Image (cartoon, rainbow, N blue to C red; front, side, top):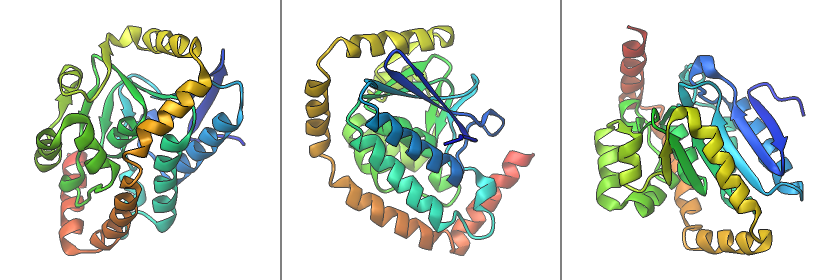
Length: 252
């Protein structure tokens, strides 16, 4: 298919899926999520692909979550909920290892995208955090339950309850990312990791990925419940007030 919001690049058995909305800090729309799902499907069905890399275009942002412009008039549409949930499922289900190359801001839904990737390599300029409670939203699925598996209960609660921003080094120290490198070295470092993976048995890695996922696949139940709950919550006065306040602050 012809992609509008992403770039799909293949080279030496590696697919690079690049969110290509730098003017919006690579925030995603419904169409972006849909294109990413199709891209992951293509990567899964291509027997020659060994690794999938997710990156944001430019040097400012990996992904900053959902585009707030699409949330006007009562929140995101049901179609976004569908593609959002499906994308999370596909990142988990794809049999090839996925690497998040975090080149800048990874917040909100963008933060969760890197969490569900198998590995995360960050530029030293990257910033991390959740913003849901600031905008009258939340993710009670992989954004909370799986995050707690990665960084521990206390830290996960801190991330959500305070909505702070964390540096790449802080992310490394809490186990949120695998490695931090200078921004100029990010793509080279990711390529090194891809090359190491390609030297190993693809079927062994496939079975290992399924084994790692098996213990946390139940979180999909929380994910589905969370999406339904957020849709109801978005229509409340409380959510609307926080969303309005957040947008007004951004425009100042």
